[in-house]
Length: 387
Ligand SMILES: *Cc1c(COP(=O)(O)O)cnc(C)c1O
Image (cartoon, rainbow, N blue to C red; front, side, top):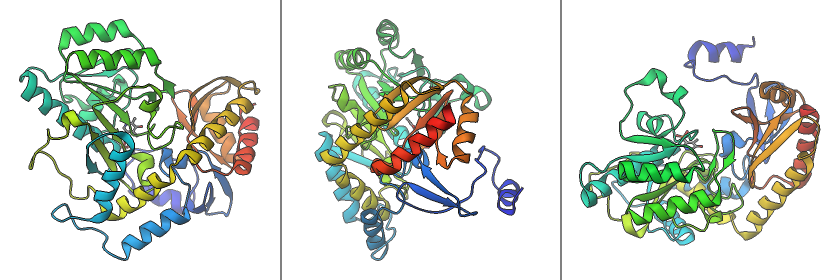
């Protein structure tokens, strides 16, 4: 074991199964390890470095803000924070934004909004939140409760009460749960990411929207992974012709700096009042300046490119040796391999490609601006690893 592996093992809490690679630098979609070996990055730090490593515009925006002020707290106004919120609202039709630092926190805020909205409007016993089986909403105790995967729950009881999980794409089960629980909200990912890159059926999402509207139950979409251009729309709900009451996002929004955002529609824009919620770092001007650059880069040209690259990956791998199936949307794709997924990822590493897994699938979340020639090389290597 190398020095760096040993030091990490000695001092870092034992929660991660890391790949045996120490990354020291990168540029675009290529990262370099301590031995000088280069890898094409098809994971972008779990969908975070949406514009790749050290994108020039992003870096400039961040450095410029660092030269002005790196943090103020929410006791004061800052320009990047307000501008980012304005841009998010302009591009989604939402009305207000609460900023935090991660996906889990963005969902925590959404859950608090749902609880308060329902308690005030429908009474104290209307607090249940319906989520889906096989979902993932975060690691805090409340977002773990929201996460519909029992194996995450086992050792951390009691979790926050008031969450019910229904099977994805089962309209009848959803309708039944809506009647049984009179819920405060439905929370769902349009493409289940950690659950195995599984897009929801349009019919199911539209049914959820309709049922929610009928009962004044909030429709809350977790866009932590699917958001910010990942699926070739700015937000994945935009594929489904629905207008959510609450949207949460994080990961790719910051382009590599920690930020979470909870977007509130007109109906719930004034639910939170002073003292209800807060975050010391939330809306940090450096993170917001970087995020603003990410959002401004996500124009129709880039989104079209995301779709083209997605089509390229699908057509290259669909009938490739060792591939059983491919699911997903845009540059959020899950490949079910014939080999065990861990073996494929190890073979990718040998061949100089970084990929992710999700359940039994190889998950690809490359930078949205990965150059086509780099992507071609990476997909050739991946093909070889899968075969
Ligand atoms: C990653 C993820 C989260 C949690 O985000 P963190 O930033 O790790 O807290 C929540 N929801 C979804 C859909 C995710 O993919």
